Length: 192
Image (cartoon, rainbow, N blue to C red; front, side, top):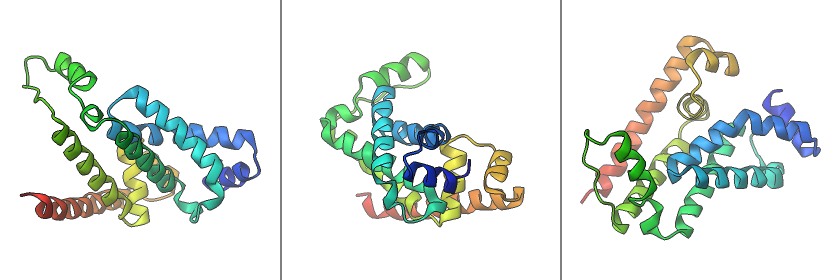
């Protein structure tokens, strides 16, 4: 089922269409949430909230050709809201994340203690990244999301978007280049 068919079905309260939407985009939504929250349980909770929001507000979708981008924005916004509701010191605490990281890399690196200020900095950096992704041209954003957030290979992206291999490679390159410029400007303006 393509995105237009899925959207039409969901608008008509067709349950199989909604299931198809979830199956098609659950990796993107979960991946987007997890990259911000860094906690599997929280990312699963936010993913459920995202799909509930999608069901309630799919009639507000302005561009049917950018369903993945719309889902990405909702996941990003819900994840950031989730972090803001939590205590900033716990939003990126030394607890679960660093315990897991330390066990995997015990002798390789020293794990830095994160304060509330570090946690807020991390949130701001993630917001800058996701804002920069949102500002990419539509095709670049879609290809980047499929490649980096859904782990699609170049061939899978070619098939999904009906693009040539060289087009996909070019779009990924331009998306990364544009992100690099945006983030360079962000960090240049925000470093003290």
